[in-house]
Length: 82
Image 1 (cartoon, one colour):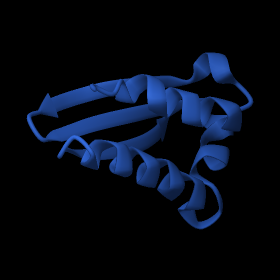
Image 2 (tube, helix red, strand yellow):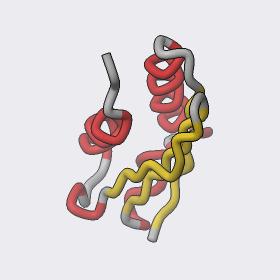
Image 3 (cartoon, helix red, strand yellow):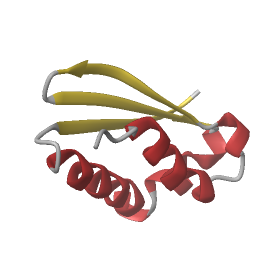
């Protein structure tokens, strides 16, 4: 069963932001076993998505890592504002 990582990460992050229309999740590359993802949020929402000491970002990454490991893949997630 193939997982749509863009949709999964979008669904995880959307309830956290105040400006959900500015949320963009992109797959940068899918080189076999390594998937690179990029999350773009409104500058006002960057702190909400990262969380105190990066706890929210780490939680999102942990869920994505667990999902990817079931398919024997690795995933990297970068969070930025635009």
